Length: 357
Figure 1 (cartoon, one colour):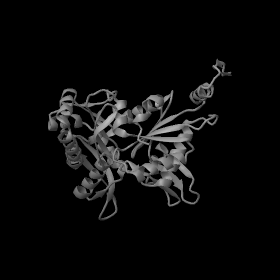
Figure 2 (spheres, helix red, strand yellow; figure 1 turned 30 degrees about the horizontal axis):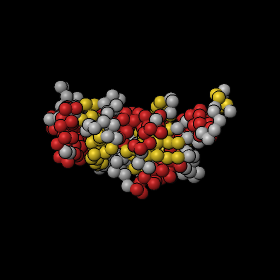
Figure 3 (cartoon, helix red, strand yellow; figure 1 turned 120 degrees about the horizontal axis):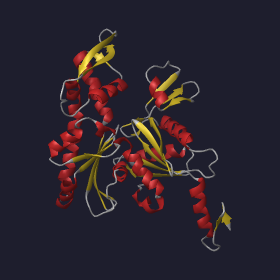
Figure 4 (cartoon, one colour; figure 1 turned 180 degrees about the horizontal axis):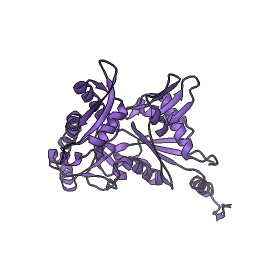
């Protein structure tokens, strides 16, 4: 028997071998980081080929997608009543099932080929604190897109894999993954989770803290994406060498008239202090719960920072100062989780035990 020019031995294993070859040749298994802020997709054998904001715009009358991802983000807050623009993920989990299913379906169709003979399998990164109901929602939303099998992996495990940490060794590896909706703090060893905690304080909470600060101090209402822009430009966990400021436009709460203000890095840092303190507190709690042997490894090897929140200026230095343990920002923190999920996708037979569903 032969497939695509390859000779196969006859016998009891012939069907299994043939199926395995067909899967590898004709099925494009996927890995997904379904994030609150961004969704990334990794295709087996190709790498990361999609990185889009988790935003959907639909026509109210028909329910058909008007835009998804970056195009939807561009029109967020600027549409008529005929178009609904939403962020379907909240705090790392599905807040709007219908819109999430639509978004996943749209994105998967973009990365899979129509001539694929077999529907792909998909591995999705989810928060470690996710409930059974939330797991079921993620699985159902993915199945709606036409994949044949859905597997879930906890994001701290995926982030550690993406960072190249030796999680299969008898060695404590501590990672802090600061995403858009959740911050995951975990200690991993021997392909298992020794300790994990998921708090719903992360990038989105930082953006909302900036919105509240601007509203209280200046009486100005700004959009969530404007707050995100401020965070990227002025956000920091420690003071800059020189004072910085940017021009911010919003709507005055009392009069409703548009107004422009000058916002300083000090004001932004004050706004971010509460969410940063909550993240530090979760790290300290994890260290308090760790065994002396685990603490020994962590002290020697340090703690690793992943996720988009890890890019906040000075955060690694402040965490090091607060805990007296060295923090290391992983390479390309934004794609760390999807790279880890991608490793599982590439080696599914050997690494399937790392999946939780």
